[in-house]
Length: 186
Image (cartoon, rainbow, N blue to C red):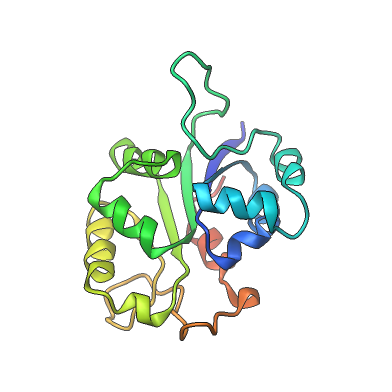
């Protein structure tokens, strides 16, 4: 039986290449469901290499970006694990505060209480990383059991993404492989 991975992507440059993590997860045996923040959805429908329909066809599931109506059936199978990548500072700080104003946030806030594996791979610059709320939010999520793959230079994390100088991020250097090594085997 295949396990289901919820890939939750925020609007950061690596979200422009979502076929990369989808293919990697499928190769590792995961059934992938893609959930996007509202801005990541806008990027996926307007600015992604490839085509939004390709993402739906590739996963075999609807790509979700907003809450369904209570009268609508669930369109996705229940998740066995979550990968939040790329994770922006906006979503990071809202998640740590328990804010659920988007479907993506609602799912990952709830995920903490479900006790399923949650891996978060950030993508933001080092100026954003210096904001005091970022360090507090990372610590809060780690304490709640989220594996935040961030090398923030404080020696208290799992290693992982190293924030880059503003306007100098390298899309090709985003470490998707770290996230997949951190996930349990499918």
